[in-house]
Image (cartoon, rainbow, N blue to C red):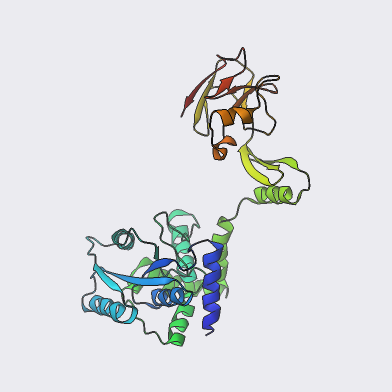
Length: 333
């Protein structure tokens, strides 16, 4: 076992997904198993300030007590009792995250867990959505590039004892691990890695979008637009690149980036702002109107502009060209 190679792989994963700032304080949620034990050690080896917490659900009697004692003595973990009524995998998981909320936390989910999750969701919901590298509540998963057998080998290589949860085999995930995946590996020796690729494919942009953005980035033209389909346009203005919605006929009420627009005359369209846009024939620059109205830079590209032909006639909430004061009803959605 090349301990340094595992640590380098985890470091690359953390950097790729911007999971942790250098030297960050992080709490490892530990069960005593090889995955979370490996997590605790690797994060410390990479220079993070690591503490450990073991959430004790107390479901397996003496075995649970032994797990808690092990985490406290070997990993220096704080033990937090957290009994759960009618425990299920999801309720236990959310209880662990809930009781430790308020700190930056990491879990020991591995590539093996990812494969099992994809299979379980494929069967139960028809999706191949995997474990997210970062939850909305800030829980991060630094070990998603490491396989379960590698965490076991890592712990053995650095001399860290670990525990095994005897109840794992009784779960749906345990059924996948024990019976389904071995059969899939008989069909193809790279079954695990190929299933993992399905997650990576889901995380990619549609190929047409990727090609369009790549073409813009490689172009030497200072200003250019590419239709990406599905009502999206990619725009490059020198060193800036953004996506905007394609021009849309204003027929009936529509919503656009937080605005609700209702036309009172025919022939109107709504589109995003473009450099050089002016209000009416020779009116003020739209950019100057944004500045005067103190519209933040971050909101300008998404601000709807109402046009009649090639002329901008209404900047919602800011200005109207002469004769178009009653062209459209505008309100915040």
